[in-house]
Length: 195
Ligand SMILES: CC(C)(COP(=O)(O)OP(=O)(O)OC[C@H]1O[C@@H](n2cnc3c(N)ncnc32)[C@H](O)[C@@H]1OP(=O)(O)O)[C@@H](O)C(=O)NCCC(=O)NCCS
Figure 1 (cartoon, rainbow, N blue to C red):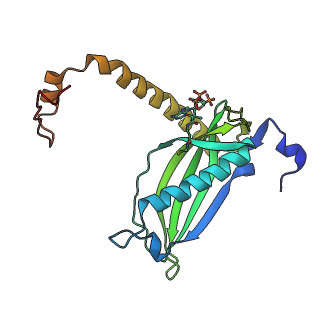
Figure 2 (spheres, rainbow, N blue to C red):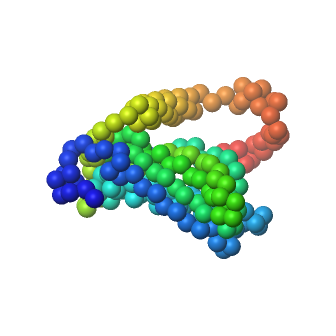
């Protein structure tokens, strides 16, 4: 348990806020195909990200964005799902929580990695302004790697958003028709609707 002094530190260790949530997948979580709804898993991921971020920040946090949610394997009713979260990166008021999701078949004890995702959370003051978050103490190579990868992902994302925004005014429909010629779409623009 952290002591009162530790809670006030301007830098915190990754292990200070590491969080795991484990939940049994009950039948009401299933989709029409009998597997667990992706939305159920997303909701659990948001919860564990919140707990991890709020512990590190010492403040209420909101979800700002989610990066890459690939469902690698289906989760079955009856599985025990564990979501392991830790802070990978901190900015000024935001932090990135990495989440690894695993499902366990409780009869066979086979554990499957079902997805890994990155949630950007922003800390808020009680009057709803972004709050500065403590820095991160990196204690091993893996933690340094995760911090650096998150930093790169953030830079790449900002670049991509900027490129898309700045290219929008130059959108050329004729060029787009050519680019999309080999894609599985049919362009039928009705000039009356095209406003
Ligand atoms: C996310 C939110 C707090 C950002 O507020 P804002 O006034 O745009 O804040 P700023 O531009 O000052 O950015 C604050 C931090 O958030 C980060 N941020 C803002 N939008 C982001 C996004 N879409 N993705 C990743 N980071 C983001 C900024 O990089 C900045 O980080 P830093 O302080 O570490 O450098 C605000 O948009 C919000 O409250 N959104 C709703 C969140 C919510 O309700 N989530 C639940 C889903 S229903």
